[in-house]
Length: 239
Length: 292
Image (cartoon, rainbow over all chains, first blue to last red; front, side):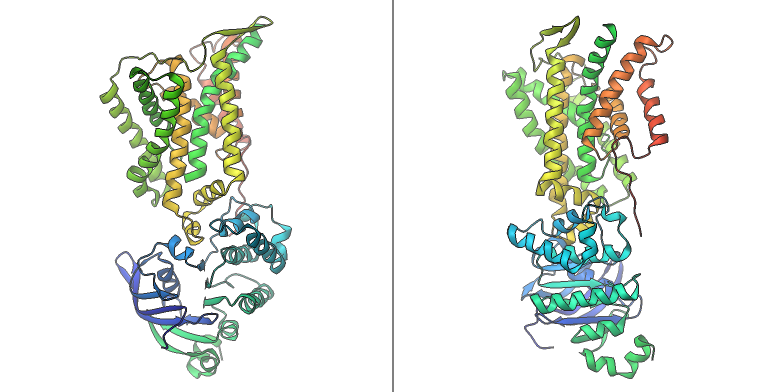
């Protein structure tokens, strides 16, 4: 792997309590690039994202912008500019939609830029603007996913970790969400590490892809190349 | 005229329940835990204030120093005693607060003993007369402090960044950490603020009840009832409910013969149960609608 990526993992082992899930993961996300993380259920995709965020125990090399993050707590990792949109969306159910978005920006001091980002979120996701004063717990699944991405954007991140953003969403909603992700990448050079069941959509957005099997990386390369490989097509694209 | 006097006395008693209820609600909003030790922490604070007065400090400065010290006390209790339980189920955290109650009760008996101590009144002990009704300055002062506390608390929780961060952490600590919120520090702040509020409550009650390690055991029952009745998430609800409880208790004891003084504590509890049957979220609580 070439040095100088925004996020670099090498030889990462991680897990929960006594059970080890990752057995040596190497991957890289370039600045402004999108890496898709593919693999079957239980391969360790979510654990990889959690290892980056510091939500599980981990060892090995984890660097973000050249800085060692392997000993940081989740809030410290987040403050460096990594926004993790967890599976299940992490909605703050008893806060309003607008408050959820502002929680994303609670550490920022640049008020006018925060306000601009808030309006950008409402532009990108009009349903959130309509329901800005509703309790977030009452939003639909699609709206909550938009809210989770919006909240991540509000922190002004350099890297987005997305864990199954399309889970449980209608195809049109998924399509709209990926359009927004593409837009965000184009307009702010936002890098992404994307775990996604809809592999076709994921490889379409990504420029590189890695395949994870039982806690190890078994394949990596340009997304287009992986999308053309028979084994990937058979395993994940259903053709 | 007797009824007016009963209402005034009820509001005075209710203000005392309300002050502790407010601390319970604050702790719950800021940390998601119902803290059964809240009253006992307030008693420790009040003993501390009493010691300061014994050492020659004036009452008002003693209370001010105590409130500041209680912020640290609350934060320390969270960090040292509660932190390890917060990641467990809410039930375990609640049982831990009951343990904390017993521990602090024992410690304050050990340090300050069991005999009743007179606590000097914060306000003048004079009374006001208005059209035949009597209002003590202390009751009026307690009432006003409580109203001020609600307003400050509301502004803090709903209008500041810190309030937003505290509410976020109480709602979902893991998810809040992913937004960069230092969860541990915020929990300490939440417990500190609640302890500060409890200290105010303790010092307001102490002149009336006399100070001993079990001073707030009875008040805690009323305060819990008020917090539940008002909706555990609503500071205003807790205080209004505390007033309703104080007044209804007084009126029932005076006007319903078989209740009298012996059964008066059952009135607010009965009322609470009835209201919860009709409105499980409490009078002022927001009903939670959660989709998954």
